[in-house]
Length: 139
Image (cartoon, rainbow, N blue to C red):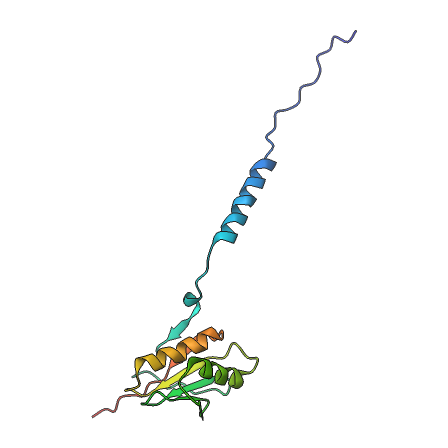
C-alpha cells in the first residue's frame, strides 16, 4: 500500500483560447474595414511666388486651355469626355503607374475640366499630382 502523497501539479493558465479569440477579432476587423480610395490622392499645390521646379522627362503633363480642351503631353485629346481622357493618359504612361502628374490649367479654365483631369488620373492609379503656377509679375 502506497501511503505517500502524490505530487501536485503546479497550477497553470492555458492562454491558447485567448490567443484564438484575439486572432479572430483581428481577422474580423481586417475584413470588415473599408478603405476609401479618395484618401490616397495627394495633391501638392505649389506657391505662386516659390522657387521654380525643373520638369523631368518621367512625368505626365496634362494641359487644359481656356475652353476646357485637354492636351496630354502636348497632344490634343479628341473630346472632353472622361473616358477619352483616360485612354489618352493610358497611351501616354504605358505601364508606368507611379509617374507624377502636372496639371497646367489656364486661369479661366472651367473648374469642372480640372476636376475631370484629376478624376481621370486618379482612376488610373496616378496619385502624385501637382499644379503649375506662374510667378506674379512684380511692378
